[in-house]
Length: 118
Image (cartoon, rainbow, N blue to C red; front, side, top):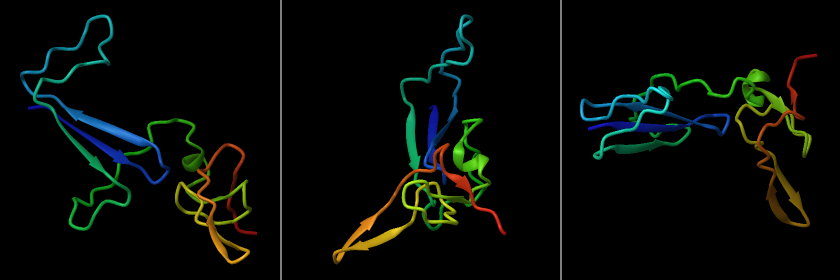
């Protein structure tokens, strides 16, 4: 049985890893990177952070070469609200406006800046 695990990464992107069994068809000669799974594939979705008790091996790296979160060394300043030193892929700012709580939740983008000392 083939198995696909999809990891939600700290940057908010998703990395899928597939293990193929002997019943999976061989890769296509036209496109060897698009191999299909067998009919009995299992799917597992791992949130970030992984739940307690889950294998704590390091998560795979983001598959995007230019992931804004990774490019900024996993520490960034939000271009929407101005909150600095975010260490997750989504802005953690909580604002209180007229007694109501609002969360920024902006995802690190190419306009956000790297948080640096000094």
